[in-house]
Length: 177
Image (spheres, helix red, strand yellow):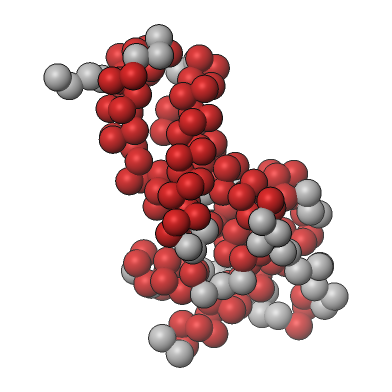
């Protein structure tokens, strides 16, 4: 039996356990890859995924079909990953760089455009947690610096500087790749 996304959501809103399993089976792999971008240790990423799906099922009645359901779920997964990093004191963001002018500010062709996706993900795993998190939120998830600053309780300038520093570090790693 194949259900449309709308039908699947409706059945999950009725707390249909079979539909919840189908929803999990349909989206778990994709959402797990989101977890892994933030959390390098597989077991931790699996735990975050389970917590995220618990919240998805717990709050599915809040979803009102405005925007993408997958995007709504992704935001929950990202928030769970960030909470995990904060809770375990793994999210350390460097203070604002004192002199960002010393860094090459022109990133006209971003590092993310120069490598295949898998190569980027391998390199991202090597970044410090703060750099990796902000790079993921900005470049991959598409959040604005103000949103990132609000999520991580940092300044907009810190978000911007961390992104620049992450790209600079990626560029250096890429030259050794």
